[in-house]
Image 1 (cartoon, rainbow, N blue to C red):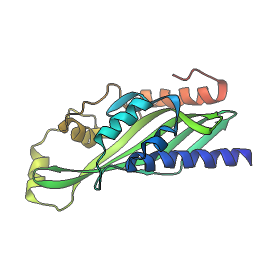
Image 2: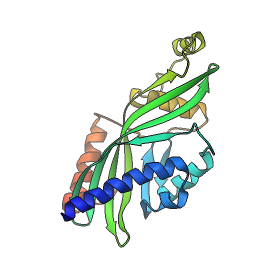
Image 3: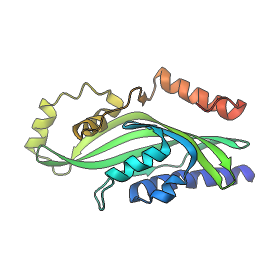
Image 4: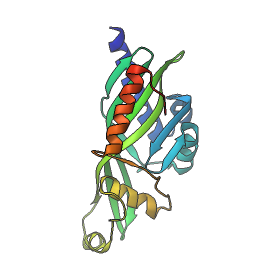
Amino acid sequence: MDETKDITEIAQLIQKWGLCRDQGRWDDLKATFTPGGTIFVTWFRGWFADFVEASQKMHLPAAPRVKHLIALPVVQVQGNRAVAETNVQILGRFAVAQTQVDYTSHARFLDRLVRTADGWRIHARVAIYEKDRFDPVVPGAAFNDFMKRTDFSKVPEPYRYLGYRLLSAGRPLQDGIICDGTPEAAALIRNAQHWVLKGGCAD
């Protein structure tokens, strides 16, 4: 029963992260991580407190804005540590070639969590990218021509269109972004499992 309670609390925490991030509830968002927590996504790598500050600067006051659809996590608990792997879709909208375009990125969050005096908190999060796509809100010739003439190949396929969107907005991509099925992703998962089961380092 204690493990079930822990898993439920962790699942709620991960859902809370997505809701607060999308809705701009910054104080509540900060409370989902430990004070020294870190996060690594396409556009940011570093302390979570700095991530919140950067997110706040980009946040739009009204829709349409970025949306995180977060599934139920698969959680492994060992004492005061846990690892959670969670499917997520990152949805956004922007204008290109006189067309409103929706992008959809499929990824997973790999979280290391610790039990604190205030409950479970995320200690470190790394996103693992799987695939993505562009879709015009209203299909048309301008968008089709844009897709034919634009070279997206400089960005790795698992986050190609999300990466293009970020670069076109003047936001550089981080080095070493983790892609699904790579040795780096396998090592990341393996190290997280070692950390939760055998008390490995939190790097």
